[in-house]
Length: 114
Image 1 (cartoon, rainbow, N blue to C red):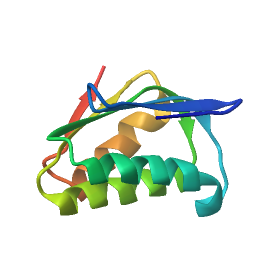
Image 2: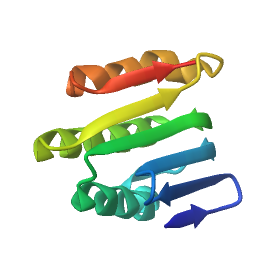
Image 3: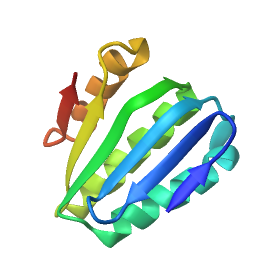
Image 4: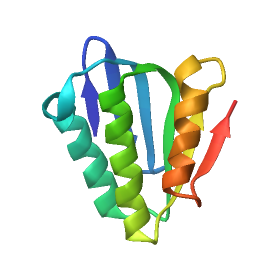
């Protein structure tokens, strides 16, 4: 599954259960984030034992996007049988602070900042 736009791309690799996000997500509100939410919901509903969210190439994520990610983490937490690994980059300013907040929503979330 893939969503490819001018400023970003999101790809789900079913073999590795990895969602990779690249580029810059500056969408406005739930409506514009809808296709991404659908992709993430599909991934959560498939219930892989370990799900990796690779954000290392995601240079920008606005507050609507952070809210979308937070809701996704809460959905995964409610499933109780999915472990989630979030990969980020310390070189991208928004990631250090925002990704650590995801651990507050799901304490078992494994955060890998490189």
